[in-house]
Image (cartoon, rainbow, N blue to C red; front, side, top):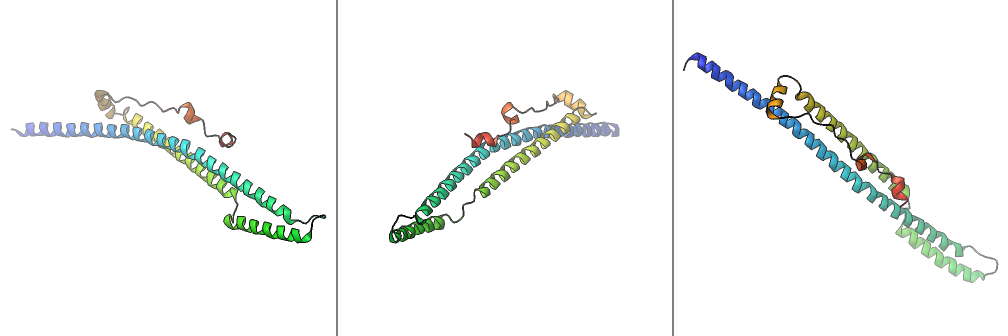
Length: 187
């Protein structure tokens, strides 16, 4: 073989490697879009599962706290003396009531529903921030891919191998509708 043939073969190999490199780059960018879509779907599912369950938990805790406070208030009432009752009976009732109140308070020393609400707000905010970040990542991935298939010389490779412009993802109606905590609380 002559030197010219080696040069032609070398140029052919370099050109082939370049085509393979561009193809792999476009394939990677296309896969990155699918990854971003899957991640965003997972975040929507997480939000749809997590937030309603947290709201149910907070509602149950608020109901429990309300019932506990009503019970403590009810237990305190007999401890207040009335005009017509025997003071000795009042003391015994008051002592019994005080014991019941102490047991209730010892069993549930802190009744603070606001902590539950704060945790719910924090979880809701985290979910929405993750979804916003996922949307930004998806948009950047689509832009990067679409830019790659229209610039020279990768547009030639994209055309040859059938890489198409990726359409922007539009959220479904359910995804566009943010979770309405007020509706969930009032169910």
